[in-house]
Image (tube, rainbow, N blue to C red; front, top):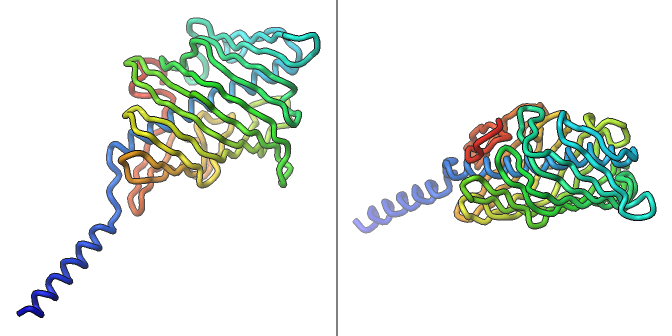
Length: 281
C-alpha cells in the first residue's frame, strides 16, 4: 500500500514539474508594455530623422529652410568661426507632416562640427515639443565614433532624462545607450537612403509605473524610408512580467512585429499614435 502511494506521489510530482516548465501565455500586460516601448522608440527615432535632415541644412551653410512642408529650420553661428552651429526646428503651434503626424514646438540642436567628422558631437533638447499630443523631453547626445572594422561609421547615442507625457498626465520615462552603425546612405546628399543597425540597452518606467530594461539581442534595423524598424529583436525585462522578446521581422517595411515567449507568439500592430494620444495616426 505504501509502495502504491509513493508511486502516485511521484507521478503527481512529475506532472507538476512538467506543468511548471510550460511557457506562460502572452498576457495583455505584456502586449501593452510592448506597445509602450515601440511607441517610445518610434518617437525618438523620428527625432533622429529630423536631426539628420536639419544637420544637412546646417552643413550647407543655410540660415533657414523649410522641411516636411511646414517646420522652419533656422541655423545660427554663436561664435566667430564656422563651428559650432545652433539649429532650431520650429514646428509652430501645429505642423502636419507625412502620415498625418502632428508636431508642435521646437527641437533645439547644437553641432560641434560636421557630422561626418570623427568626434563631432550633436546635442538635442526640446522646447514644448509635442508629437500627436504627447510631450517629448530629454537630452539626446550623438557622437561620431568613426568607422568600425567594416569601415561603417558608428554613432554613439545617449538619451538622458527622456520623458513622454500624455494628456492624462501619465508618463513613460526612458534613458538609453545605443550605437547606430550606418550600413548605407551616410555619404550621399539625401537622408532618405539612410539605413542603420542599432545595438544597446534602454531603461526606464512604463505607463503602468513598472521599471523596465530593453536589451537589443539582434541588431535593430532602421531605415529613413520606413516609419518603423524593419528587423531585429528586443528583449523585454519588466517588473512583475515574465521576460519576452519582440521580433520586428525580416526586413520588410510594414507595421507589424511579433511578441515571443517560449513557444507562444502574438503579432502586434506598430503605431505612431498611442491609445492615450488624442490626435494623429
